[in-house]
Length: 239
Image (cartoon, rainbow, N blue to C red):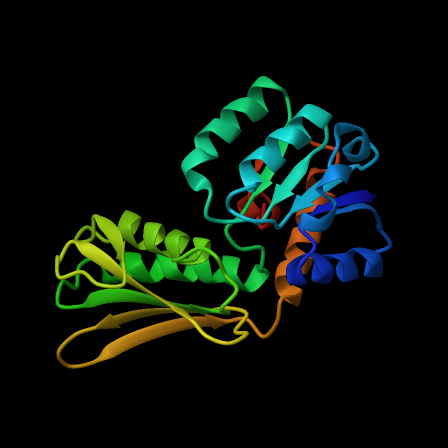
């Protein structure tokens, strides 16, 4: 495949390595220094675009890919207030859009484990639950998209939690997400259920960005010949 990389920071470079290892070609690399190259004509030379840019630019990048008629994989978080609009435009233009808050296979297994545990804990009201996420200091949004997805999974299964809030909350029906930014940490997510007598904790720790890059490339390969809206659930189906 021929790939357009939108966003060529540390994540973009890691994706490029994985693409080349899997014998794909990078035909376009867009960063802040060459935005003039981000044209419909240049996009049209690619089979799929992969966007790991910034929350402020992601929406416009996605729409531009729809206009160019190429599928797009988006790994940028922090723009989801416009998600429904993106889906609407994608369907109106018969486009192809793949979004995940996290492309790591391990994290997506962790999502399933989180949902299962929340279902088990629903009848044990003596346990409160909280989320902690730690990322590198360069991450622009907080909480992470992964932490938000984990929170939504818990809220869907746990009757005593109705919403989430960043950092502090004394409301019993609110799930607290602690967001920390430390050094070059690729990503740590912890779910902790605690009572007066014990606690249960599950965690996912990324060792590097390589797992994210691999998942994003798998997503690009998956949608190259498809139309519609997709997520990691589609890749990880077992049937």
